[in-house]
Length: 454
Image (cartoon, rainbow, N blue to C red; front, side):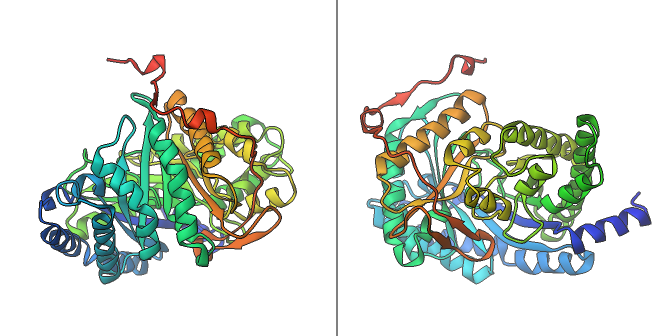
C-alpha cells in the first residue's frame, strides 16, 4: 500500500526535483508488413503504425493529468527497417521513401520521435543493410522525427570494422546534409555495440525481433531526485551513500511501474519493461554531473569520477530491480554532454575531456553521447572513436554507443545550440593523430575469449 507520506514525497519529487516519466514508447513489429512491392510495403507500414499508436499520445496525456505525473515524450519504435525493407528496396532512395513514411505517420499520431531506421550488422552486412546505412544522411535530412541506429558490434560476434569505417563516413555526410541546422541530423543517429531489444530511449530505440507484436516500454528519469536525496547525507560514508541512492531509485521506478501498467491496460498492449535511467536535461537541477559533485567531486571529470559513476550506476540498478519485475533497456546513468548542464560546466572548466568521457563509458549506461566536435574532423577519426567505444562494450559485455556530432563550420571554443531536450554543447577537442591505417584494414575484430559460453 502507498501511504499519504509517500504520496506527498512523490509530489515533492515532481514539483521541485524534476522527476518525470521521460517517455512512453510503443514498440511495433513490422515483420508482417514485409512485401516485395515498395508501394504496398509503405502502405502496410503506415497502416500498422497508425492503427497501433493512434491513441498513444491521448492516453499518455490522460494518465499524466489523472496522476499528476509529467510524461515528457510519447514515442514509437519499430522493427529495424533494414529487415523490413530488404525484399522491396533496390536503392538507398527506396529506403529514404520508407523513412518519409515513418515521419508522416509519426506526425499523424503526434509522437515526438519514431525509432528503428536501423540495421544490425555486428558480424556482416547484407546488401539491403548496407543500402540502408548509406541512405541515413538523406533520410535524416529529409525527416523531422525519424531516429536511426546501427549496431556494429557485440560480445558474441566481435566488431564489424567495415561497418565502423562506413559509419564514420555516414556521420560526416549526415553532418554535411544538415549543416544548416548545425548538423542536427547527427543527434538522431547512434552507433551501438550490444544494442538492447527493448530500449525506449531515442535516438537508439528499435523494436527487437525477439519482442511481441506490440509492447509498451516506459523510461523514467530523476537525476534531481537523487541529487536532493544525497544532499541530506552529505559527508556520510559509502554505505549510507549507496543505501540512499538505492532507496531513491526504488521510489522513482515505482512511478514508472504505475504509468507503464496504466498505459498497458488502457491501450490493450502488453507491458514490456521499465527503464530507470538517470537521463538528464538542460534544466538546472536535473544533472547527473551534479550528482557526482554532490558525492564529493569539484567537477565531473576530476580524479574519482569513474569510481563515483560506477557506484551510482550500480545502485540505481539495484534499487530499480526491487520496484519492478521487468526492469530493462539501458537502466543506469546517462552522461550526454549537451543535455546535462553540469557536464557542460565541467567541459568549460577544462575538467572533462573526450578521453575522460571514454573512461566513464566503461561504467555508465550507454557511451559517448551528444558530444559536439569540430566540423572538420575526418571520417577516419570518427571511425576510430567508434571503434574504441565498441571495444569497451564488447570486452565488458555491456551496451556502449556513440552519438557524436561534427558541427560543420565550428571549432573548439565555440558552442552549438540544439534546443529542447538536446540542449547546447561546447565543441570538444579531438585527438587528430591518424588512425587511417587501422580503420582501413577491413574485416572484423574477433569476439573476446569470454564470448564462448554455451
